[in-house]
Image 1: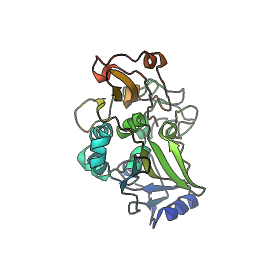
Image 2: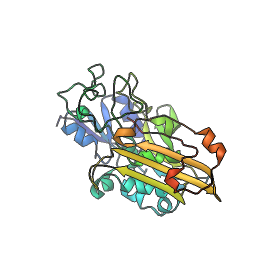
Image 3: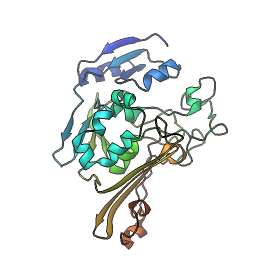
Length: 305
């Protein structure tokens, strides 16, 4: 591992000041992804800014009836939070499908959004990778790419974002709160992650000197009709080959609203894609099929890094 400086942020404003002063610095909270990347020589931060003690660990009701989730809320705490289990069970299911209990205990909400791809070639510094070294090429396109994307790709990159939680957040149409030197702003989840295009090294639309402070869930949680399906090579501690977050709102036998978000390696690269089947929505089919079979108004938002 490389040598680096270490500093602890005293508050959010201090964290922003420190990251703005050093473009080679990185925030660290649970460290479940960054430490691995540093060990593999993929990330080489000159300075680590510890934000793990900032007051961003609460889950609170919003004035509009939703939930505001602090960026440092551990994944385990979020999955088992009573309000999430009761009102947003899709999110709870997706979180519990990811990683191991030990990792979920350490991983944070904000860190989950910002984790980097698990593409084999991204981790292998002996091979070209446009995400790691822009302009070097994409080894995955003609290489071992079973876990990579089939949608939303570019000639520069076919990597995917590995998160399960983000697929549910996409279906729920969450919002991401961030703070930087210019103040606070809110980013719609569908605009947070980026398609690779010609700049695959840019995973998100978060500015280099900004910090994620919270994720906001809308009042509608689709608690009655939902499913998170994850296809993987083994039943535990494996990233998705394909994942789908599906949610329905029914009014009698009519589908009033439906959400569909795609994730995982094979289908996940639908980043920033928002598709609605207008004809299916207008038809308002009777609810005579299992919920998974009726994407009446499909909104797909992958979480491709």
